[in-house]
Amino acid sequence: MTFTELSSLSASTLMKLVQIRADEAYSGSFTVFVNEGSYIVAFGLPALGFKQAARLESCPTLKAALVTALVEEPFFSDVSLK
Image (cartoon, rainbow, N blue to C red):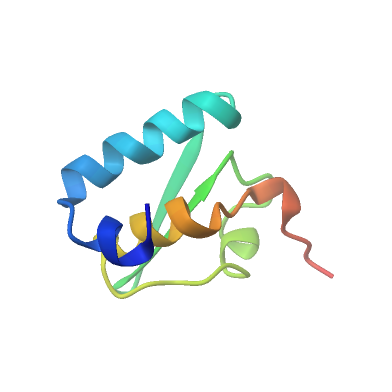
């Protein structure tokens, strides 16, 4: 699905789609960070907590973060702190 098509879905539906994708490719794990009104959703579990999450794109809404996760598939093990 495209970014526009995904954006038309409810946050609840997007959360289910993220869980399905996590089950398929990321051992069932994804993480949602909320910090000062911004959201980050990425697959896997962060080894270094928010320092690692801060390197990913944040979004103004949970819905936008879920769509971004489905389109870009950020994965914590791919995030470097260097």
